Each structure stands twice: as C-alpha cells, then as structure tokens.
Image (cartoon, rainbow, N blue to C red; front, side, top):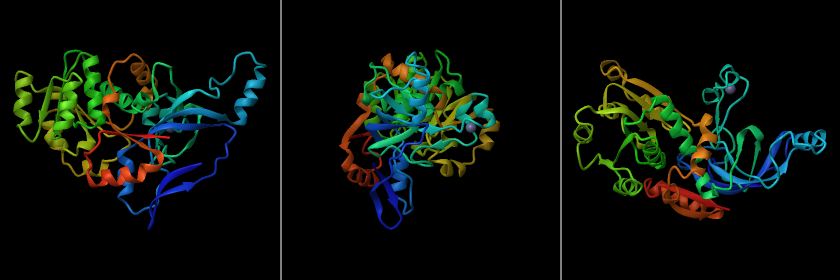
Length: 350
Ligand SMILES: [Zn+2]
C-alpha cells in the first residue's frame, strides 16, 4: 500500500505503508479519489501530515476475520454483515466514535470526537484504504464512481438545509461558488427553493447558470446587497449558506439576509475555522436577530445523498474540472497552490 503524505523538510512524498487488516476492518481498492481543500492547505505547510485526501470510492477486496467468522456462524444462511468482496463503496470522510453521548443518541454528526479523514486520520489518496464497516456505504449500480465522489457535498448540503429548515419558495442565498456551493444551489432547486449564488468567479457563476440556477450575482461586478434586494422584492434572503471556502466575511454575508433569517456557515472538514473566528459577527446576530448555525459535516446524510445521486436529482459530472492519474497528484497540488481557483473539482484516477 502506498499513500501521499507531507513530510517536514521533504514536501509531498509517496510512502509505503503496512496493509495488515484488523479483525473488524475491510480493505478497499480505491478507484476514484479527489483533491480536497485540506490537501492544498497541508501541501502549503511544512509539517508532517497524515495521508492526504478526504473523498474516495472503491471496491471491497478483503474482509477481516470477524466477517468470515460471522459468515460461518450463519451457516451460509444470510450473512451477518452486509458487505461482500466486490462491493463498490464510498468511504465516509468523517469518523464518529460511536460511544459518546451524542453518538449514543444517534446524533453522530455532532460526535464529540468526530475525526476528519485526511486531516485527523489517514486519508484517501492511497491505492488501498482500510476502514470499518460503519464508515462505508455500498453504492447502487445507478451511481457511477465519478458521481459518488460528490456524496460528501450532497450530504453536507442536506445537513445545511436541515439546519436552515429550508422550505419550498424560500430565497436561499449561497455565498461561495465552490463545488459545495454549486451542488447546494442545484439541490435547492430540487427542493423548490430559490437559490441565489454569489461569487466573484465568473466561470463558476456561468456553470451555475448552465445547471439551472437562474440568479447568480458577481460580487465584484455588482453590489450584491442591491441585487438581492431586487431579486427578493425588497425582503432580502430568507435563508443563507456561507460556504467558508469563499473566505467572504460572515458579517458581509449576513447583510444579504432578512431580519430574523437563518444563516448556516458551511465548512466541510473545518478548514477555515480560524479565519471565521476573526470575524466579529455577534453584534449583527443580535441586531438582525439572526439564527446562526454551523455545519461542518454531512455525516448523517450520506445514505440520503447516495439515494439522491441515484435519482439524478442533480448533475455533478460537469463539476469535474480535470482528471489526473494517481502518480500525477504532486503536479496538480502544485498547480492549485499557484492558482487556487483553477479547478472546481479534481478527480484522481487509479
Ligand atoms: Zn461520538
């Protein structure tokens, strides 16, 4: 097994690693992975990292002894574990402990010890991933490997909608035309809400238009507040999702929201916490009586997300900007480090 890590003083290295399987683990041959924001952050730091990569899809190639044991216990009648060799699975980008108070109450998205793959534990930019059954989701044949790498973005969008109590007819302003923003805008259409996408990148806005998002606002070309005032007939937005990767200040985004509106700061994998901490938004939360919430993961919506992709609720293939081979990951990371907005989604092929 080999995976990409950052080594202090050496930069990106492809490192060999042990491939032994614990009794309760499964081994997955990765077929598709992606390059995440976290990987770019790690690439820019001269610090030892875990294996990079947050999202991946692959095929189960080996099952730990527990699985074989349980299988024989069942004497061939119904397998205790659902997983089989050859199953295509998506690996959860977040690992809940399963033991804390929130996990026991089945609220794993707010697990007190939630770990992010590729940040806290070894990630998916490796040829084989070792995981536990609770952290993988079997893919139906209707979802291709290329679509399945978007499960996290769909899941986190669904988590944001739940927090925002998004309703049919709501104006939902999405600040940030990253891959998460573009997925969320399409999903909002599916839920019959009215998405308004704000970004400074004209390419992302044009892509959103192509995907059916009618209201796009270039925050550099026009005054977004005025434009949103006009789109919403003077009411401003009912709901707002600030995609943290946009690095647009929370107080500025809040000015697009109506009084008493709901706002979610969406930050997959908690990459931008420090930048957001530096914003002083408390005063606005009070004066506008905003319901502010944070969404850092889509843990509880992974299965729903897979189902939505199977039902073609949104188009995701158009969001793939480039496909690179596993041995070319170094080149693409250096590319993004020089031009952060060059790609919307980078797919890694094995
Ligand atoms: Zn927990």
